[in-house]
Length: 261
Image 1 (cartoon, rainbow, N blue to C red):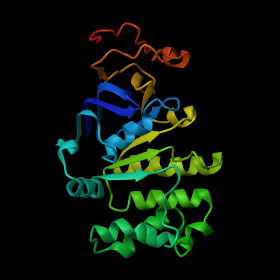
Image 2 (cartoon, rainbow, N blue to C red; image 1 turned 180 degrees about the vertical axis):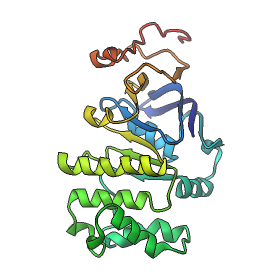
Image 3 (cartoon, helix red, strand yellow; image 1 turned 180 degrees about the horizontal axis):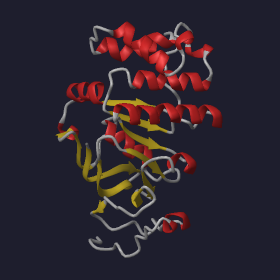
Image 4 (cartoon, helix red, strand yellow; image 1 turned 135 degrees about the horizontal axis):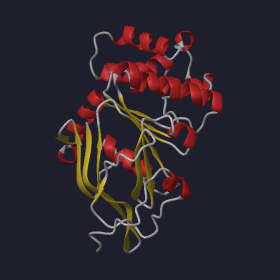
């Protein structure tokens, strides 16, 4: 389970503090497929980075299976990420001097896996790139590179897969294929999948949808319903007004003004 408690994020902007995320609580259950949407600057990629331990919150706690990662040093955090969290980036982040298979082997070799080679080839087959394992990233299409990135992220069978705009650099056909692969991982392995996207159609495929605006959660719906599991501890930002689409999903935050300050 992923649990955020009173998490907030601020950064210095000149002589002032800019709030990226206002304090809130959030729980994501094991095996859920959650999409996080919002306009640019809403804080969605920051939120994903905080869940992954790639960024630190300014306040609050982040628990992965009841372990508070905000209290961990870098070595312990790296071990937890290697065992429990896979991350897929929009821009692939493959190592250009290594082949597709060698890119997949990296996390397996770091973890000391005894079956590294067979596991890498199994993953190549799972992403339907068995015959491309010896190719370098520059020899692969964008869709193929992202499929290799997914295979690498899932190499050590992490229970959590985080994806930041994984289809953002792909055409619709390759984007659909990449999303299908991640959905299959979610369904077949009960992998918790958290997907950040601008694409409303992709977001609609998730079993749970979370929308951010101005660093605040403005919608949290389960299967098109209004099962809200977010507890906002601070005032909803005055500019975080629900959009027409957010109102259409039955989530209106105008009345949530307790705790102003």
